[in-house]
Length: 194
Image: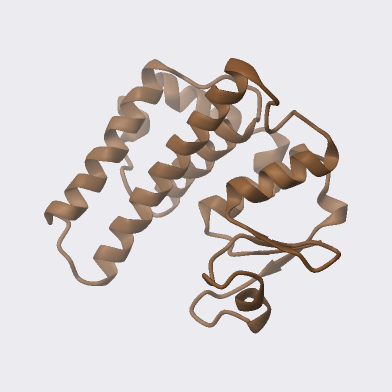
């Protein structure tokens, strides 16, 4: 299998971490792409031209990180990354949506900044508020230690905020979440997917 990705994408980071948890690193070739000049292979696999995109051995393209992770989990018949049922599954799915939402907001803010839209613009401020509310929620509902898809999404999003220099004070004002993040980022799936 081939996974098209960019190293900086929080969504691709989540998938790469899941690949480690599922012990599939030797089954998936990582293909780094430049989205400013996407290769024809990526465009053929995902007409949206977005990463991550997975191409299976029989040429089927699977895209968007939640779908890729669900596919890989089903392929391995593992419920480690995507819990199979009940409250554990729904909590994991909800956490994935929250982590992906933080990443979505941060990416939107960066796109506005690249378009020279001031940071005090109403659209940018709405996204900053969404990020802050999400981080506030995570401070009182600190994720657990198990690297399921929800926690992978949250960790990838928080790491993205740190890497792009956005909301850099979140750790100081959210000590419980910062402790979780520091510990979680030491897991092999996170260190190996960096």
